[in-house]
Amino acid sequence: MRIGIPLETAPGENRVAIVPETIARVKKLGFDFVVQSGAGLKASHPDDAYEKAGATVVSTARDAWAADVVLKVQPPRADAAAGAHEIDLIPQGSVLIAFLNGGRDEDLNRRLAERRVTSFAMELIPRISRAQKMDALSSMSTVAGYKAALIAAYSLGRFFPLFMTAAGTLTPARVFVLGAGVAGLQAIATSRRLGAVVEAFDVRPAVREEVQSLGASFVSLELTREDQQDRGGYAKEMSDDEQRREREMIAEHVASSDVVITTANVPGRRAPVLITRDMVERMRPGSVIVDLAAESGGNCELTQAGTDVRHGDIIIHGPVNLASTLPAHASQMYSRNISALLVHMVKDGHLDLDFADEIVHDTCIAGQDGAFLAESANR
Image (cartoon, rainbow, N blue to C red):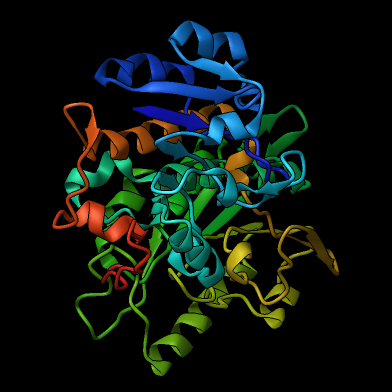
């Protein structure tokens, strides 16, 4: 079975779908890997590393796309160098595995279905125990949470840790993290390693122990409902009264923090606005906000995706695709995730797509017959 790894053409994308160590490990299952020249270079993997791992390096995108299965990071797009849309380069009846906008891009879905390409979206991996090693969203959130803390430390005009010097004692920075999912927990851990005093808020009481185990204080809001998360582990939508009480509590902690890192996202919907203009204007001069929900609208009212906003003396970062800024490790993790899904769908060296299997069914957005699958319950 021929597996194609094209060069990522999206602006600012430095990751690669498969790294050489993964090829060396799974090639024995009967896969022949074809890698476009330069595909792994930005992630610190030159062509000769792929050749040593047993892959064939090809010079053009057309050669890399001409495969039974194509593995990518970003969705297919128009490729000026190839003179065609990438969907038109993949053979009819082939399989594509990549981040595919959660199956919500109707034009992309239609084009893939018309091409009779069976397409699997990595962001739709169900959050069940046997799919953990395939969970690319968690892997990329780990990168984003780590980098968010570094961005904040770089931007803040003071030290993160406590310093006792000949000039006297310097107090540590105070960091407030909104959302204790994978990204939030990594932001907490990294901020603590840098020496900051960290508080974290999440509507799910179940994450309290995880937050505290990292050395942070858990800020809670007493809610009447016992279960605050859905079957995918995401926070449920709150009532109007709960949202009002949440905003009041958040405003208090935002005002007393040097850094606020926000990570609240709702799959398939606009990110909730948790920090208003008024809250920003109440922050201490020189404070920093890093909004990890910028790509889905932002948790801060003033966030602008892909840029830094200075509102008075407050800096608001709206980073996008943070995982691509650490391409070596991001690619290594993604490679393990996507190869685990691929291996899960292969039996005796051939694809065995069992749509009764929850993992296969939930990640597929279009089948070979051109029909769209019904939206999965986890979307």
